[in-house]
Image (tube, rainbow, N blue to C red; front, side, top):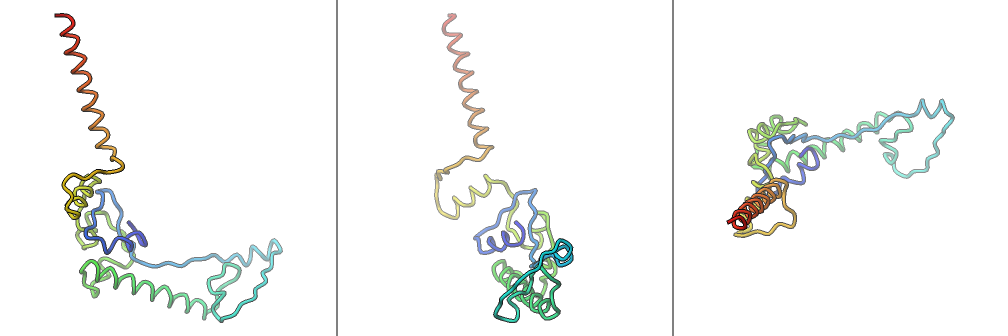
Length: 174
């Protein structure tokens, strides 16, 4: 859960991350490339009709003007500030200490838990148990079983079948 996917999770009742997860990257980026020289080399010219001073800001067809860069920096700063504010509010974190959990840091799940970005480290079974608990469902029915559940069911089914065939074999020979 990094960047936008982490943002989408912040208002969850509980955030559980897999032990091998990467969490965080609370930051904002806006990139483009400057293909002006390449376009000149191959003979491509742009034609633009626009209304609004900043409508072409961020274009890859030429170098950005100082004013455009300033506008885009203001946009990314505003978006970043909102992201950090929302994370701090949703997770109950000190916005004044945002450099410890935001600033585009990328955390292992343990470090993410230490700084307050997640509540628990667990696997799918852990998350399913928490969902059932939060929803007050005693015997949940899941549409899709996770791999461990499927493996355990297959193992037990195969074991039962082998035991049955063993005992039926004994019965037939008696």
